[in-house]
Amino acid sequence: MIRRATLRHSGFTIIELMITLLVMAVIMGLAVPSMRSFMLNQRVRNASYDLTSSLILARSEATKRNQDVVITRIGSDWKNGWTITTAGASGDDTIMKHDAISDIAITASAASITYRHTGRLIAGSGTPTFELNVSPTQTGISKRCLTVDLSGKAVNEC
Image 1 (spheres, helix red, strand yellow):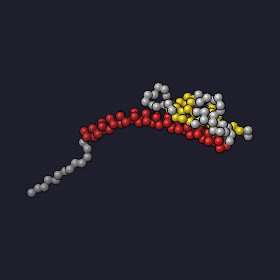
Image 2: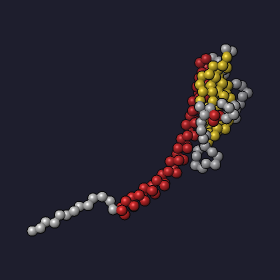
Image 3: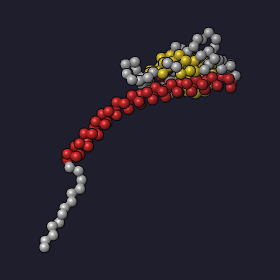
Image 4: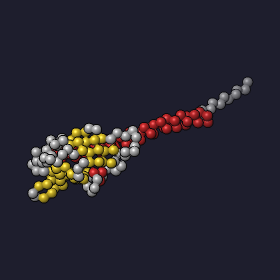
């Protein structure tokens, strides 16, 4: 009696491999656009958090040091960054400098904000507002708005 050796083949056929790649391509095609909008929304959110925390820092430093503290944009636009400095009789002291934020448009109603030693804004300075967005032409990206009321509190609202 002659025994026949049975050969077992393991692996994928070319058709199974092609179907798997097709399914993966469809899933990636659906996931990549939503991931892009998610990433852009996060960039806008992070930029607004950075600006809010800088405003909170400037306000707290004004009350702590018992002198005026100014937050000023660098250059002609807030997206270039900003600095927080004291405005005392002994000269300016830089408390913090924030680097530029790329690919985010920041529209503001003021070039600088001065916190008095009480933590309030200078009387008559109005309520500074900021609008942060990736681009006005981008769809599906939420803009963020910040308003600083006269008491010096930064409020996220849009």
